[in-house]
Amino acid sequence: MGNSSSCFIILLLLISLLSESAAKLRSSKLTPRLLGKFSQLDKQTKTLNLQQYKYETRYFDQRLDHFSFADLPNFRQRYLISFDHWVGPAKKGPIFFYCGNEGVIEWFAANTGFVWEQAPKFGAMVIFPEHRYYGESMPYGSRDEAYKNSTTLAHLTAEQALADFAVLLTDLKRNLSAEACPVVLFGGSYGGMLAAWMRLKYPHMAIGALASSAPILQFEDIVPPEIFYDIVSNDFKRESTSCFNTIKESWDVLISEGQKNNGLTQLTKTFRLCQKLKRTEDLSDWLDSAYSYLAMANYPYPTSFLMPLPGNPIKEVCRKIDSCPNGTTVLERIFEGISVYYNYTGSVDCFDLDDDPHGMNGWNWQACTEMVMPMSSNKDSSMFPAYNFSYTAFEEECWKEFQVKPRPTWISTEFGGHDIKAVLKMFGSNIIFSNGLLDPWSGGSVLEDISETIVALVTEKGAHHIDLRAATADDPDWLVEQRETEIMMIKGWLSDYYQDKKAVFDM
Image 1: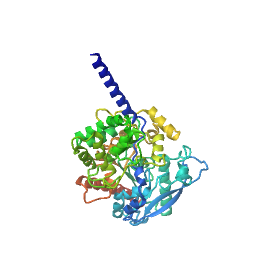
Image 2: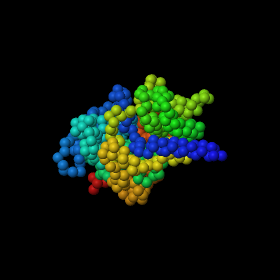
Image 3: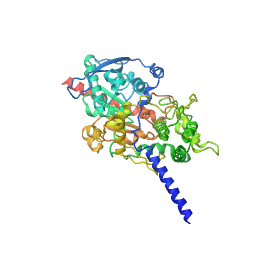
Image 4: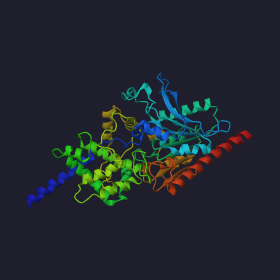
């Protein structure tokens, strides 16, 4: 009896240690990145995707700080502009303005075919401005100088980016004698957040905004912190319960393997890593990122948006995991599944876990300052290791990386979020919040109509801003209908604007 009790206690201790280790894998993890890392893909790929669109690349001198009178150096903001289909200022041709995200602007332009395709139908000018501190729009002359420390990064904020957009738009309209031309804002992901916020903060600048997959509510306690990873988990569970369970089981197996003698070496071999694994956490983050991005890019047709992927990629991942022969270990099954994401073409010989060779990146800075999006994982509903968001651990990680303390309540103070339905019903108008429920960021977005003019377009099978992608022959009917609704609403905004202008002139 004594031996049995001792064994039981040891077993409980082992389980407890594994659970604590799993929690540590994620306790101080920064906010999951949106799309910026993918914008660093090779220039040839981006150029090929953009060749079908005619545009000019221009630069505009921007103030570094729009909200002070300090004598700071200006920087050159890059923007793409197309007059190809614009009917001009005499006809008050509309301006389609995409709010640039956290990355190189060509990549976002190449993956926003909807705007390019609609421009000729509306006689619209198209503008894609690059977000400050990304791509070529670097203060202080270079990325190295701009990302040098917390002082040089201090002006990388959403507020400054929106002010950049407003100043650029004002200058362009004045120089083109287009002051009377209506502006429609577009954006996806973080760009969608910026589009919605710009419509609210600068209502005189634009007549409406299409904010696709915009998690403007993913702050503080506005939505449950578990919602992101619950949606990712449900995306896998809906395809295969056994696939979900294998992934859920794999984290403890991963930790246990890593704690063995030569365990990291064995993990390096199992996952065909280019360099020897130094920490189990690095492999865990690599897997976590793949599952999250698979949920975001779970499109019904093949794409190369994030990585070359088949249609319904989660279905394919689970097929790979579930179809392994008897005797295949859990981690071998995971490798087979994850290879759909990281190596669907079969052209990769080994995998490099370091996706940011510069160490610092702009989105991590934004996550550590104002874009504080609490994330947790529920032990029952999630396939990820269970953990609760620890602001203390998060703050420590941000201080370690940037020597900066986050302001977790600033976004809701600056842009709102709490009781958003009642608030926006009183003063907001002309915003479309479009979301697909397969997208994990949909949990932090607006999923219900707020008023007749602030509407939520929600699709059950949609993924991350699929509506902004170029139309294809494989588009399902629900996606075609969603875009038709968006087009109809934008036409309504423009019609109202022109009617109001005509009424003024008739007076």
